[in-house]
Image (cartoon, rainbow, N blue to C red; front, side):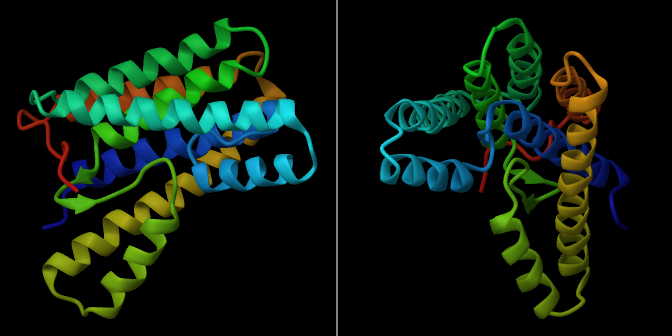
Length: 208
């Protein structure tokens, strides 16, 4: 039987990732979860001799890398999924207190912590802040047949992809309607943390 809680977790995580990335791109011209996009922007900056922008996008990538690495290190000590998600919520909210585009660095740290802290939902590998791998995994799951395991994998991945797009849409709208739009993803990350806390096993932590 498909786990409703698992689909809810996948939805909240990917809503957070999509919304935060859309908000950061529209406000600051950079991605904070999709490091593929930030790396492309970095290459364009270098080719265009925009050194200040290259440093900026390089900084975003570096912060994402370090935050993810530290989160993986913390998992060696059995850190529960709830804690990284709570930290992600705090960082996303705190980003609204930092003036200027460098507030995006806090968002990059938040999304790295989220993605590194929760790499599985219901036993299904899921990236919640970028979707290229999820898209390929969904195609593979569909091609492998309709056994119960594949149906669950398909449902979780499809939920994540749709939720990521919905989060991006909500984030884009929020930029025009809210003075502090990153509060939206912060609330979503907090809701995800509470949903993981509801499961005594703190499911989905750490294993790829």
